[in-house]
Image (cartoon, rainbow, N blue to C red; front, side):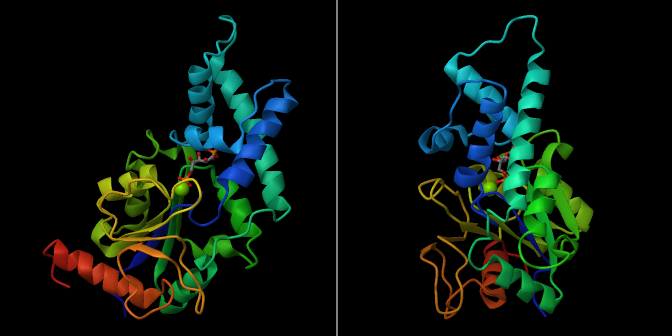
Length: 263
Ligand code: XBP
Ligand code: MG
């Protein structure tokens, strides 16, 4: 039996490396589809990731590029249409199985499930994107493993606001102190920490490796697999060679001890 009750996973950049080779080409395909000469290369996209949410990112790009629509054009409708088209391209890519899960994710989910640990998702992307990613991850009915999937426009404010984590905790009926969160970005880390999720594991990726993750107690380049350990930046694996439930138990106990809570 473990001291924590649930694991809450971010999706983009954490569960799968979706941004550079998934969302970005899908945005570009949507721009081309409507005859826009916009193109987000990998480096520009890295800058645009400062803003979470696909619609919000399109607006941010337009502001940065000084792009103004004809005054008689409905900007919300324009952005919503572009985002709908982008989502269609992204779903098609997922449907082709183009984006695998990151190393260690499926293993840890299986370990958690076998141990009776509850699983949840808290992400900025749309619920359809989550469903399609899970549907092509190689396990039948994988989405059913998750008691809660909190995703997309269901909350007033997106990460770094803690709203989506508050919603996931509320739907789990759990306190933040009883959960461990998994994130990849500075925006995500702030959202989790501001929701009280101090037991936070960061797995960085090419876009987030240099970011500031605040008080996150465990920062690595991946979750790792037995025999293929992750690079640990902050924290320790304490004898395990990948992030497993024993590592999470030690992390959780350390965090609870540090916050003066009894084990
Ligand atoms: C990261 C995001 C998302 C995606 C694009 O989500 O900021 O907006 O970049 O997805 P996460 P949408 O919280 O999982 O890291 O276009 O569906 O918003
Ligand atoms: Mg993320």
